[in-house]
Image (cartoon, rainbow, N blue to C red; front, side, top):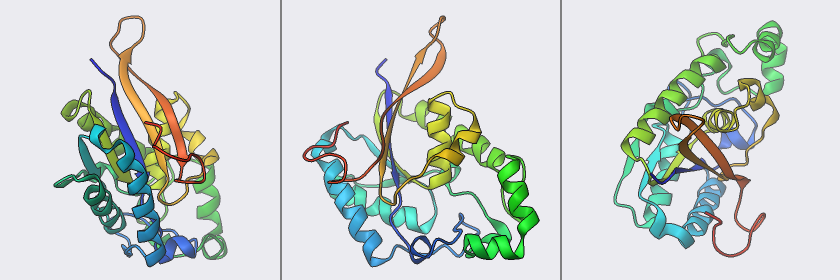
Length: 222
């Protein structure tokens, strides 16, 4: 069977992105895309449209900024609908939501230190990285089962995308501390069965954190 290609698109900018504020999932302030964010997503969508005939489905996190981004992508690619999977929502940051890193460091210094040192630690009222990993990987299983051998554009967030990259590369979850993703950037992972028995889910990474113009001219390198 052909690999299942997942084209991961990070949502465009919101005012929280611009101000470098923690911005979580459905329990967050749930800000919309700002004007710059919409423009960047449109540019990314037009880049993807160069291989649009290969895209079978557009999937999104249920969070407002991802849905708005996915609707732009679907429109440009000529897809009739956007499917939604809650598993790919951003991490919930609880009491940190809407705060800058410096504000959290000043108000919750012990919590912040614990968060960086323990993947099972969650901000007050929020989620841990391990919790997010579990629901993201469950979402991955659903995508591969429903769209095996297809090409899926999945619009999501920093934490879920980095979690999928770590899984694809066989890296420990701590690897997400060492990755950065631009708004409206694209990462491509291909998932397939391999290993000695041919039944192990494996992956390769074709593209990471790419944006139109900055990395390639011309057609998207799918």
